[in-house]
Image (tube, rainbow, N blue to C red; front, top):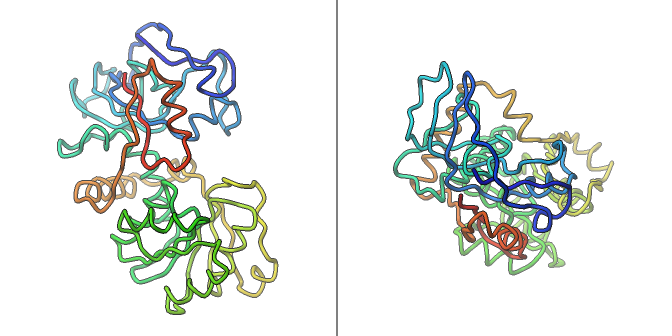
Length: 325
């Protein structure tokens, strides 16, 4: 079978090569998938660079999420059938024609979902809905997030709106407001405007903002914290600009604020099965009804992986780049 392998750490477009590998056989509790499509995530590229929290032994496989067709069943797997379409997330090494995965972690895909949607159903959307659950906010509440025009930011806004939760979005560029409006997302301000705080207050009508999500770091962390109400919670989700959060001790003290970290893989590991099933059911329903959109920026054959990575890294990209096997 063909598989994308790297012999050294570095930029994916430079170090990934398509190589022949033996066809794996599933063990007890495992399934072999014939991979159809797989998205390129930032954490995949960071792993290939050797800069992520998980650093594989070399030579290394790649890719962590895919849509696949069940090709072979290991001993004891009875709830799936050969030929069934399933989504897999968190399985390392899916940038290949075939991959092994634990049967228990697979999500059966309804016929109503297109392949391009199903291929990206788990990692980003499930992180977004898990984050929303983690914030512990109710219908009518306000939350604030920076990087509102990022993939998770857009999904969080759509999922929150479907639950009746209000989201104030912060972007760094004014044209980011128009990008989000084109996708039906309102309540966005640009921090390059001098009066952005006044605009934010006008949008919320002065209602208390219960929680904030920081995906940027640096001074932007403090911007989010400054908008929170007393006893508000600031959640660190990412560090796109800086690994340091510049926050005011005065805001922490006088707002009696709580600062937490969120790492989707850890939250998922400790999530009970009933909650996990309910959240995936909600995701599938939202995608099916169109309230959650999963756009695609391009589909590339695995042999064109360098072009695919460059497309994924392109500024202003909207939607995921998918690899086809």
